[in-house]
Length: 77
Image 1 (tube, one colour):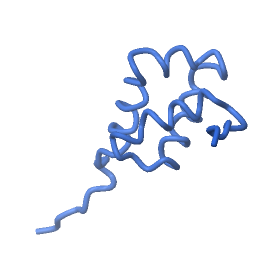
Image 2 (spheres, rainbow, N blue to C red; image 1 turned 180 degrees about the vertical axis):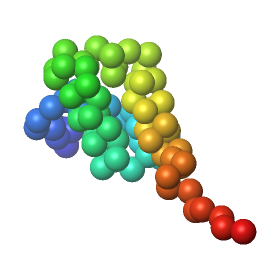
Image 3 (tube, rainbow, N blue to C red; image 1 turned 135 degrees about the vertical axis):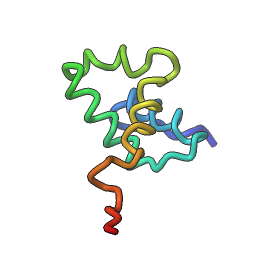
């Protein structure tokens, strides 16, 4: 049986496929790609996302997963 062709944005599909080995949630990866595309000017931003085997995408996901100071539990003595 021939492989099925994906419909839609093949660049997004490739980005999501690249994130699978890292174990990132695909919804999170899709959301992060969309945010990066907004920052980098729409479809012209793909060059930055794809550059370096999606290094920017991986770094952005990891950065967003870091706890932010306002998210940390405050300890009162």
